[in-house]
Length: 135
Ligand SMILES: [Zn+2]
Image 1 (spheres, protein in one colour):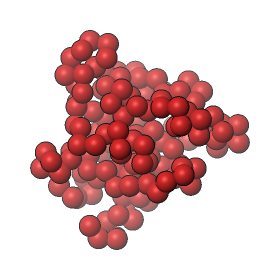
Image 2: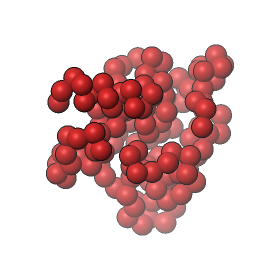
Image 3: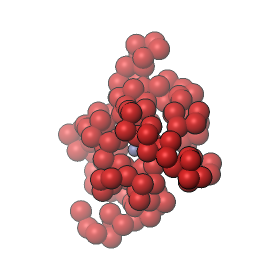
Image 4: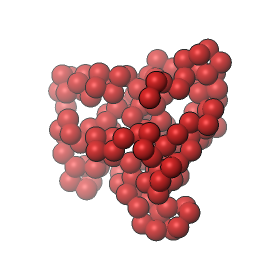
């Protein structure tokens, strides 16, 4: 992947994780390029299929593109940062991400968006007045 493409994805995301909205300077590990549709599922390395993601979201997401909605147990696709609007599927309750839709619930579950480390980082950012980002 070219450095230019990587930088385009990073800047387009406002240097925030496109899944959990964490700013990259607040996270202890470098952010990564996420293939929204994983390469395993023939996802392309093109701007339309790439997202900027924190290490935590990218690691939990892995090659997943769907999961089971924990409310209905129905097979449900994951949030797609290029096609979906974050606030249509998620909302903030302090440092906790809450889901508004089946896609939100499934993504929250698969990516473990409320894992204790991420919640703790958000708590500190909220205390500093740096989180959540403006809608
Ligand atoms: Zn994240």
